Image (cartoon, rainbow over the protein chains, first blue to last red):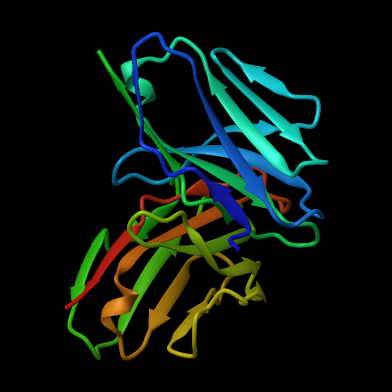
Length: 110
Length: 114
């Protein structure tokens, strides 16, 4: 079983749609959680950190459920520019290496 | 420089050859990481440096892979006797502190072994 699992997609949605991505992780001792965005043939870039209380950044909302070992990302009012791969990322406790999921591809169309 | 610089951006090599990939981190960042990303996959951890020392090399796939950071700044990832399965994008990241925050990735080196 992979340490971080994501639905690979692709999610094809029209502009203005709301879309949600889910991710599960296997290491219950994981201590930090992130969503990264990666454009085609580019490096990953931090989208947002994920906190137990949930956090929001504009149209993006991230949630963490430690009991279920589940992380989510909600994108409201999708824009064409949101088209990218979204990587769920976990920092296992006691380590300094990020563990990446395989990513979920989002395609927003007009 | 302002960001993490990786050279070369692309490298094509023949099976069995030796390659070196270079990473120049953000000035002052003591933590440096190498990752490898295969097509359709997320980045996979290879090695982590804190200063000059390799603090965690558990992700290096075998003894053909080696990395150094002799002065605590620039790092070189070295691959001996390359195999076609080594073809991937090799990403370097640096951060000011440990703990997963403040990572900045370079644009990567796309290695193709033919």
